[in-house]
Image (tube, rainbow, N blue to C red):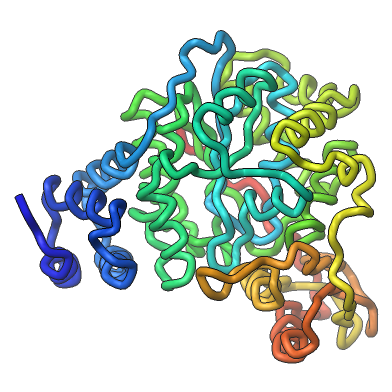
Length: 432
């Protein structure tokens, strides 16, 4: 049957349900360019406001999955497991995690995304390594995975193209925090990878797409059901995003922090979450050893060497891994200082993420070019005692006018009080 985008938008705007035929037509027409961005943006907003029922979501995920190539790695003898995060501020976990787990004998066909709204993207971070290519065709994707047990790429023109278009559109149209759109986006990519198992890191809190814990649980449950219903063993961890992960927020600086984790001296929260997610990945791969095996991959240098090998396979300059001081750094620097003595009771991930984005570490408009050297170092977090004048953050930026426009907002991310508050629990729940 033939439909019009306007009719489908009106149906969903008014709270109605779309049929399977209508959803399949919508995704096919958007993918081939028959439906323009402005109409799909209206549909995304209607979905955000009115949701989708389980049948609609199943069809949407399937239609997006079938919009391009579905990979088959059944010829690889080792287990194939991936991890995906719903996105957060300072969330660079995939970068140390993937080589760590791959060095333990797991094949990881990691298809990642770019930054969404105030949250950073794995691809943008990897591309701050000079020469690192994340846009691979299917043959090169397979070749790197076969040779190294790990590939870290985005969607090619033929791999889930519907999501590639919609993902970028959601980033700049205020339609990121939608459970159906997040679920269909993530799971269409992951189901296209030919996986045996999948671990999902579902963020909750200020800097997450889902700020309320109940919404994060619903998102986790929805994606786990989609995965297991499609024959992929899927586990979700719900983790805190009330404050940034680690110290660094940006792109090149987050690569440097990831390299520190692979050397065994990264921030405690980043290291802990990396280890816990790695344990679940090994569990799904049916590989014994758990944390001890992951710690050995760090201690022996195997995980770092895997990252070097994979970077080289992607065309990246490995000298910046060997010497992170060679990574891009913006030319200007400023600090945010504590206004008085006391304990940090608030270190707002959302505010810090928005400031980093506005300074050039993310995209305000769809076609913005990211500055890899822009970054914020978070020097005081919840529960820590600070003295008046002590730096709360160090900021690297390239544009004085952007810093002037964002300085006050960034400073508002911290609250200093006389009352000590314990840091938020990092890992909140597990959903199978």
